[in-house]
Image (cartoon, rainbow over all chains, first blue to last red; front, side, top):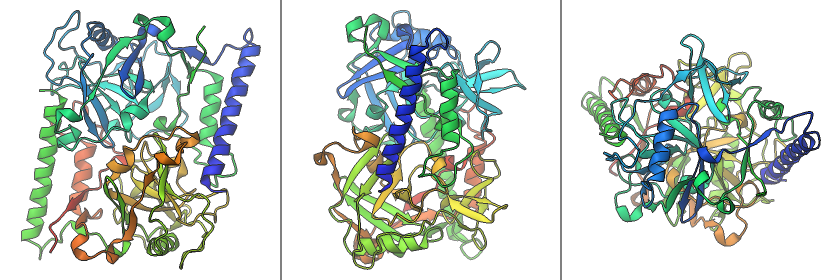
Length: 293
Length: 293
């Protein structure tokens, strides 16, 4: 009767449609490839908190050097027992050492920024709608992205759940030793100014529901308020039985395009005025858990 | 050295500039009106949680009937001991009875939706930049808003912190007995589909940091997980000594326009590529606490 009921019905309907689509793909696998892809364990991070596992899919397409450096930091156990030391409402949750001077293991203390890259050779699925911040937005292998035909550049964009690399004033002052995840409205003004390295695909609720820091910029005033990171591991280094088997919907699949269209123009009874458009950060990027083999 | 330090410097600089602007306004009050306005206690709600006070500025410009109904519910003590029963990550925190059948006191059990209104007579400060969802966006007396010259309509928009009225499938099925606040990326597809009644001006951190509900759509599975609303009151009904003296920056002031421009084109050392544009939900709406008289 209330929004609650109706929205539930709507979501169940969407879930049913998705399941039907997946089923169809399954039974006719020879004809149409599955719209789902397993996450690559070599580019997946597990951050273990007391509340549970946060899973980050890395984006080497956009930041190959930072992704390599972060994996080196992870493998050197740099992040184990590091803290979440900043939670600024409607902005970011941040962890790691802001004063990291490294090197540790094979990880470098700083790297040139990977703020944009060449759009050449990048599989880009454009959205049909315009954007406030970029000439064109869309998706690249699961990540929200933008590109500019005038400059030939492409870049990942700061949607909810995207993970980036803290840096100082110099473009080359970041390393990946301090990371943040977006927990509020997309701070798109950060696009092309800072290196994005991935996206949280599970556990955003754990990062977004932390108490906000009361200090300047959301830093906690007291280290006792920090959330301890138990461990951070590359999924490939975790025994297979302990991995979380996730699949992400291919953003270049017909099923994803159907999802977008269903969101641009909601057709259920609840909606009175379909938006007719969608903004890149309002497009859901479906992830599902599958049974381990 | 790291982003943290630099960002802190930047924020302090902005604060200093704001303070200077406010000071200037103060010393030459006869020449330039203050960019700050006190909140109207008749259109301000205090929702008391164990964690502190959440303050909502109501928007009778956009939803006069719902605002009246909500104040009637508040004055009938309907919300006292109600629960926050839904927290859906990257969407909404919601409270009140989804099955409210009223009436209670002077409050009606349902009202025609106030999804849009006539743009005529509404003081609208437009943003210079385009928008994905609306022909034009801007601000109306402190609220993010949109308008369409083709239809002559205006409406409040779903930015972070906006408060709306849950409803069922029928446009007239909401009453204000079930309210939500946006806690994630602006769900702009809800615009013109549901009644917005105000904005959280203090305490968003309390609503956004609650544990997410594990049930469908973020409803808590167990009532023991609910957050109890101790009381909800109209500020005018609260003894003056117990009120929180807040002022909001006037969104039609030159100072606010300066703030917007400073955000569209960041000029500090940290930014390498100024966005050159801004989206309505990325514009900060400054609120400050003043000493009580």
